[in-house]
Amino acid sequence: MQKEIQLQFSPDEVNLILEGLGNLPFVKVYQLIGKIQEQASQQVSGDNGQNPAPAPDRATERQSAK
Image 1 (cartoon, one colour):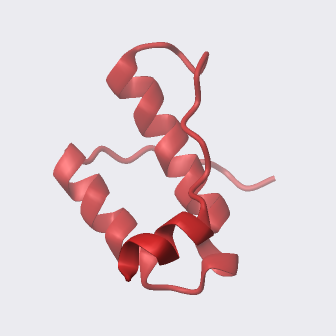
Image 2 (cartoon, rainbow, N blue to C red; image 1 turned 60 degrees about the vertical axis):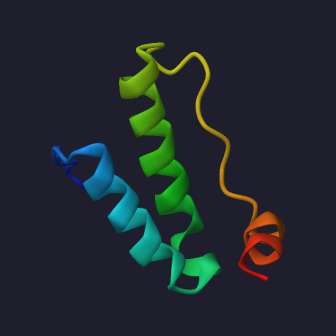
Image 3 (tube, helix red, strand yellow; image 1 turned 45 degrees about the vertical axis):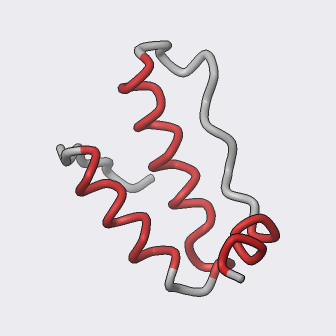
């Protein structure tokens, strides 16, 4: 089991990280993106994981990019 670390970023910094990850092959980063979104959603909404953010939908992302 890998040791986990905690980092702190502003919402703008998290969005920049997600934007950068979005430029990588989806199959390599989709789980990481989902994990970041889930943890950020918990902290922003204060729901302690009761309503995790959905994983990004690649088809929707492709539609938006057009």
